[in-house]
Structures are given as structure tokens and as C-alpha cells.
Image (cartoon, rainbow, N blue to C red; front, side):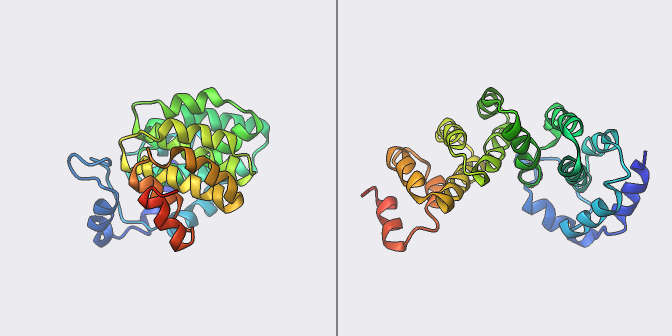
Amino acid sequence: MYTVQIKEALRVFADETSIPSKSRYFRSGKGEYGEGDQFIGVTVPNVRLVVKEFWKKCELSTCEKLLQSIIHEERLLALLLMVKKFERGDSSERRDIYSSYLHHKSHVNNWDLVDSSAFQIVGSYLLEYPDLTLLTTLAQSRSLWDRRIAIISTFAHIRSEQFEIPLEISKLLITDKEDLIHKAVGWMIREIGERSPQTERDFLINEYKTMPRTMLRYAIEKFPNEERQKWLKGEM
């Protein structure tokens, strides 16, 4: 229900001239991580306008249909609808959305899709119903996007100043080969440092020499320059 209306409402904002830049930005070319992704040229603020119009009306099944679309913006719309419904839902609705998200996670297949939904749904649910095994399984998956879901989901724990699980998942991903994971782990470590500088430094002192350079740079981005240079030179 409402699937056609939602797609039509989204296409009102389509801008074909922006499609090439979006394709480059989200690496949809041959051999890139977003290979084959298709765009219609809708900005995130305009996607959110459609969410505002339809989130109360549409069923979870509608979100699931949209999430299986080949169109990037339709998948983003589906996820933002699910986030909104999760935030406003009761415990039963939140459980259903969480389960649906995991069941359809193969369609959460670019970094913006993960970052717009993983901690809001998976992370928030796991704060209430902890399941470290799930995050560990995702972090050890062959899928780049599963691994990014794992680390980004822990942002919900970080915002609640619960750092043990985020640091455990970070350790699992320190030897990951993908740049998008390096950036995500470094980002989460930095977010821990925003709340507990000593916790971040205690973690880094044991791990920083084995971290990929990008991960370390993201983690220490807000350190004082002199200290940052020492970490980068391996002098800590």
C-alpha cells in the first residue's frame, strides 16, 4: 500500500543532471564497491520530505518493497521510513523492524545507507536487547556492508557511553582490508574519545601500531597537533 504513491512523490524531486556526480560519489562504476547502483538524482533533504509525508501511512511491508529497489534513493527512503517508524513504534513494532532490517540487509549496500540506519535500528535495539554474538557475526562477515553495519551500529552504545562493545568490535576489524571499514572504525574510536578521552587513549596505546593509517588518522583527528604527530610517528 502506498508504494506507487511514494515512488511518484520521490520522483517529483528527481534531477537527472545530478546523476553522474552521484554515481561517482557512491562508486557505482564497474569494479567499485557500489557497482550497478542506479540513481534518479534526489537529494537527502528531499528524500526526508517524502518520509515526513508517508511514514505514518505506510506499512512495514511497503518499506520492504522499496528496500528491494534497484534505485539508490528508493532504498534510502525505505530505510529512513523504517528509522522513523522504529523511533515512534512500540516494542512489538521495533522488534519487527529490527528483524526486517536484518532479513533485508543485503539491500543496505552502500555506506550512506548503512550510516543512515544501522545505529538507529540495529544499535538502538541491541541497547535494549543485547546480542554481542550478532555484532560479532556481522563483523566477521565476508560482506563489506555487514561489517560496516556491525561497527556503525555500536554508535548507539557510544552515545549511551557504553564503550566495551564498540571497542570489542573495533578490535575485530583492525586488520580489515577495506578503506570504508578503516574510516568507520576510526570514526567510532574518535566518538568514544569525544566522551571519554582516556578510554580512547588506553585503547590506542595497545592497538595503534597495527592499525591501518587511515583508521588511526580518523581516530586521532581531534587530538592536539603535537600529540597527533607523535601517534602518527609511532612515538607514544
